[in-house]
Length: 299
View 1: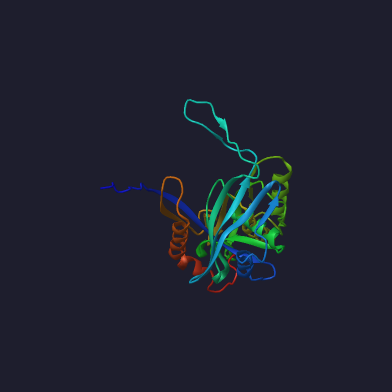
View 2 (view 1 turned 135 degrees about the vertical axis):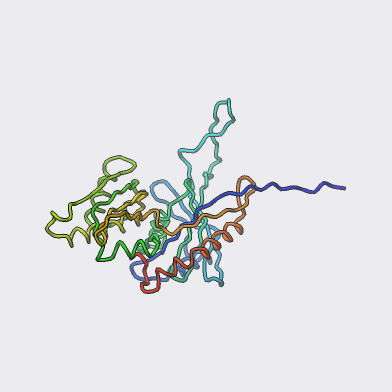
């Protein structure tokens, strides 16, 4: 009698973040994905020495959505391989090969929601939107979804921004065109200085400034722009009804932590998409709350 094959699985945690994909002309982004799926349009694009590719796209009717992966191909700065106590060896690739890093995602047609699985070695949603912009030659942005209470409080006329702290990594593309001066100057500085990131804090004494309206519009508008560009830290100190308190736009982003059984290295694609759907179901109430009045949650 043959011994049964025991497959050892290990639970692994993943974070799923939620964004809204929007275009300036309100184009049907779902149709763009389907054209890639049916091979009516290209699926890859190279920029600044990095090639990215939409891979294994698949349409679903319930819910109306597209599942897929964004693959990033690396041929330089490759990791080395080896064992403890031994010298590392170069990772050799055959001609035409590359190291592939990837992110799973699902695009839900309702409210244009992108559910994105984090991978520190892969791509960011911001890089994804730049890739789609180049691939489809249309201006697409990935707007982070923020818990309605935090966003509503920030944009309320009753809330005055005293200061905010920002940490911004150097963008990998030069295709951002901020509207607000704070965002423009921050982007120019981090891009031209040679630094990998920029951290700064801006603040005012509300009683001493002549035009509170201009500062409030600039501060709140820049906060939303910097969040969309990819700020990793964005905390505001605000005055509301006579009380000072913080609003943390990073902590208040709509996100879900999920667990998937893996074989020690990878989780099957079907399991990853099931996990993303579970995250979307978990956060559906928070997401739906953003669209009760506004079509674009962060536009």
